[in-house]
Length: 461
Image (cartoon, rainbow, N blue to C red):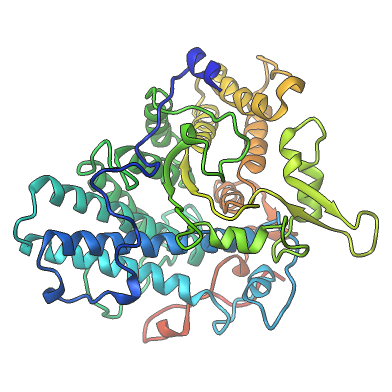
């Protein structure tokens, strides 16, 4: 939508589209084949390979696996089939008992953190590593360590703001390359560490970095963290930099989950082939063009909101067996063999910017322009602009509606509901309070050590 850029902000893309000249593929070193020993880290190539393995592990987690858990806890999916004690079924029904938990994701995030800490402990020992490469590698490490801790605290703890001082239990913070027992830090401490790592990354990352993290990626991630903290004053400072940077714009495409839409991309996981597909958990669980009965399906309540015949996004959804007892719904959003996963994108940043404008009492015309740009993309010839005298309350509701429709099944909406609940709104999620015990994933049994506090059991009944 280049007209929007000429009116308000301009566009460009980061170098995250598979054309980097100095970066290796994320699969150069498989995590399962990695030996974390000083003997294995002698050359610049060794330390780069270890960093690549961190990206690889992170990508295997953020390929839809983690996002699906957020969606299952939320309101946009129908109940999955209870096949062989399905973990998805248990999470959807908010089971909090520890023998049915997301062990792999929890342990793999910490495995990624362990590798990053190993890089930090050994990088000064690497002979022949150029100073600029050392700085870049350190920056990428801090970026990934921040993101891993943030993903962990979002699933295994109540959100920021649940207590006034954020002293409620979070997750262990791991800053050393060891496997010593660590107890849960407070949510406030975890968020402080995440922001500290991101601030360090911002001082070290280059502006361009191939398929890997750069300064804009760190800015976008920091903005998302601050927004989820309801710190709109600080969030808007960063979102302002991005939307006014003349680098990005809204894509003409309605679906970012393709190999295209480059003008939206700030940071994405690159898929190069069926053997290097970073969208596997999206495709395997939602894809409906070659699967008559996908594991994950939209809920009836969500379909009531999205099936607007004037909204082109409604084409992503279909009713099966309409009017019959076995009626169900599918989404075509993730149909395809291979596509990239845009974890950080311009539409998300722009909508955060618009909502933060409303929250901080800023110029509503800028928030309206952003919201209308997204609505115009969706409604095309049926587009009707928002009333320029729209109230703050109505505008915020419209911004939140567009967010729900834009990022459906991407793991975003449940987090937004919990954020709003922590800010004081009366929020229920499938007829249960936003902060009921079942909204948290239970810790794996491997954490059952003296002093470690497990999450409360009891679901959301």
